[in-house]
Amino acid sequence: MILGLAPPPTRREELAEFLRLRREQTSPESVGLTPNGNRRTPGLRREEIAMLAGVGLSWYTWLEQGRDITPSASVLDALARVLDLDTPERAHLFDLAGVAVPAASGDYPTEAPEELRVIVDGLQPNPAYVFGPRTDVLAWNDAATALLGSPTQAPDGRTNLLWWLFTGDGVAPSASWEETGRLTLARFRAEHARHYGEPAFTSLITALLDASPRFRELWPRHEVTAAQLGTKAFEHPVLGPLSAHHVQSIPTSHPDLRLVQFVAADERTRAALAR
Image 1 (cartoon, helix red, strand yellow):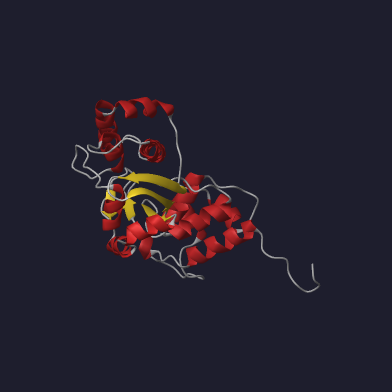
Image 2 (cartoon, rainbow, N blue to C red):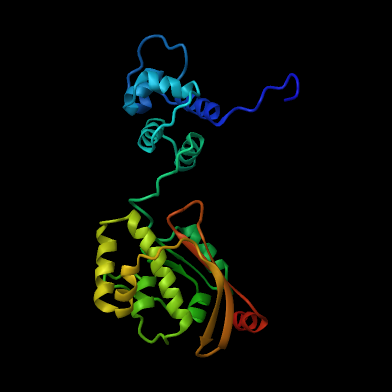
């Protein structure tokens, strides 16, 4: 250590400082308390946040003092709720506490945000699309239609990748198509665990089990995966053999959604997409 310079703060000290600052920025009125008495500091008192979060005052005080204690995910969620933390702030709280952020569940977008729809359209002549946790297609540009075709609707009326890949009429079976279906199912399987018991997921699974022998074969395998990156070969009925790199990414503004983009892997494909 250089003489005269203090060592950098530890993670626990950063956590203590973050909690103190957010506590001081949270007004009693915002959490349903009536301010009374003289307050020496702005915002909530320690005893108030401890009461609202359902934890002991001494324990919370130790947390703000940077003591060597590790809060549970449920306690961190309670503190995030009391302090009205947004999604990045909540993730920051969990990171400072050294606790894994629980996987998101519950409501998710069922329509593409306008900004993402504009981006998907603006990516032409490169194929691109956006889908949700249930693999419902929320945006699909004309280049994707030219390269991949048009996704079909599941029995509930939602345009759905998984339904299309496993039951789509008029789709020529190929090794690439089979692999795409398997990987899409593996991603869906991971999302299903986060949304277990939701009627929309259950109804789609039931319909696929009834309609697709291939789905019935793969579903019991419990394969899971996350984002995908790779190169696909296509035998296009009009454009002939094509090759494209593809990547699946997570828009930080809408982490429940996935944006898929394709770019040509060779000159022949580049010229075909440009046409």
